[in-house]
Length: 84
Image (cartoon, rainbow, N blue to C red; front, side, top):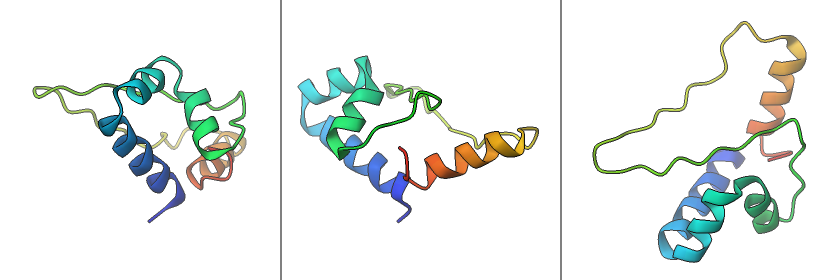
């Protein structure tokens, strides 16, 4: 499993088990994930958490190909888990 997928799976499982963690994650995902994994997430990375319901499915698409090399590299590093 990819590092970003592992982080997502861990955070999702914990949010299902703990209403307190879920509320904190919805309010401040960047700090909560940083604390949970003991990492610092760069200011250039934004993390958004969407709460699904039975009638809505969210699909996250990868960045479009019109990003600069620098932007693509930043996304690749983030998805690798190196700075997420």
